[in-house]
Length: 81
Image 1 (cartoon, rainbow, N blue to C red):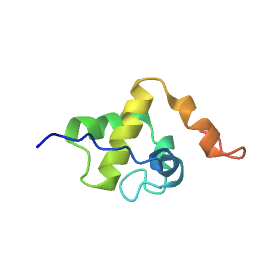
Image 2: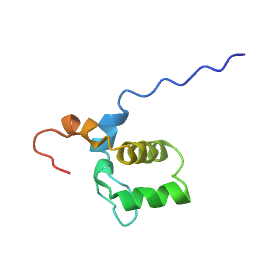
Image 3: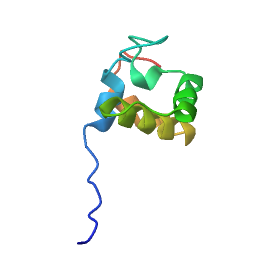
Image 4: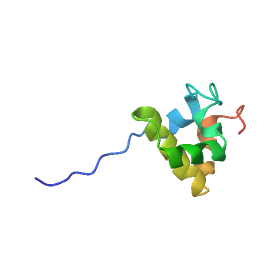
């Protein structure tokens, strides 16, 4: 059987600008607005399992590669980082 690559969820970026951190020091903070140091801590310790872990690892990659501008159009005109 051949490995089939997973198709990325097209709503992933939208979730990053809408979903709030559900626990911890930054509870209530929109995921894309989390400080880099907090996301790096998760990267070192291990991202949570499930959807939150996928979203945090995605925002980690976006921030580490300087791609924050990808999210700007999704935030809307009234939201600033």
